[in-house]
Length: 249
Image (cartoon, rainbow, N blue to C red; front, top):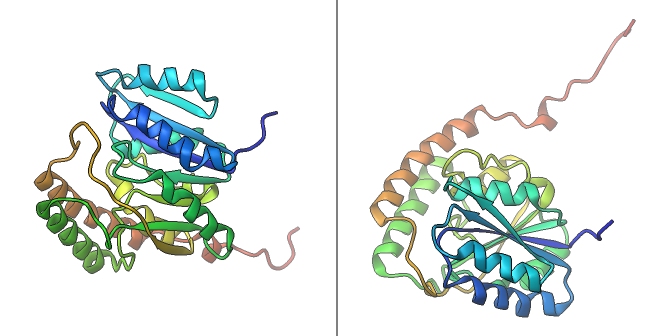
């Protein structure tokens, strides 16, 4: 039976053919070459370019590369769900395929995780965010909305760079569209302990963004209220466990 990898990296991808080769090379340099056992699971979410072919070619060279494929795009949250459920690692790292997230941050997150008393290491791009002014402004609006509506105290909830224990990751309700935006909030609801670390943030290497600025802002605001509805109705199993009393006969 294959040894359980320490880290599973889950990466959704849609039409990222010009990023795949460099993404694999950076993961190899940052993690595989440092003797941290891993698997890299890239979920091709219905790409119409050569993304899948490049992933399959990489998997023939590196056994730790795994390619999942959907015939039709289902969205980022659903792609992340598929990758997480497929993952076998003790910890699950999350990255975007556009190379704005830096795989070199994962070893630092892993070191932080190994210190103990933490279930989710969340990336924070606030010190070096490499986006244009419009995107930074819409992100600020999103963070403010989450803080007011959800009482979210995580500085950079929208950062995709994170490392989370698998037992928490596999409980995330990512079959709901847009839920990838609220992973730290939902993890807190599950009882996860969160530590934030500064991460590198870069310009997109190639390709185009999959979200329009105004579309992302409006949908994100609507999703905040949906998440609030869920938070108000969630009951932690640890708080509602019933203890049998009296004669059971």
